[in-house]
Length: 130
Image 1 (cartoon, rainbow, N blue to C red):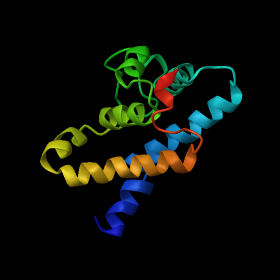
Image 2: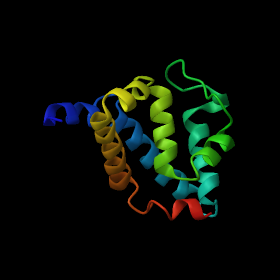
Image 3: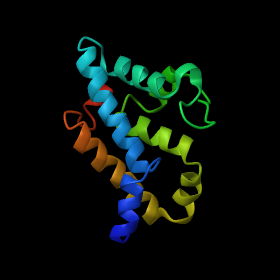
């Protein structure tokens, strides 16, 4: 992937990178505001911030299942919840995953980089313990 494509996937409005940044920044804010909440409760709060009453703040997307079901399906991982939302808001990722796996892997790498940059205290694997 060239640098321009990566830049747009990372920084443009509504891109996979901007969604990951939103998830990480707001996870950190919710964690600071509610320090006694468990990791899963923070993820639940985060999903409900992005989808109040199950409908997206911006756009026509609706959650196909409950917030708690999403957290269970994603095994309590911030990265997996973020990828779930990426797939929900970017339906083309389902096709890209099959037809262009190298591009899909680049998208996952961008998401991981953004989460690590804006929520560095979250480590993959330690999240699913709670």
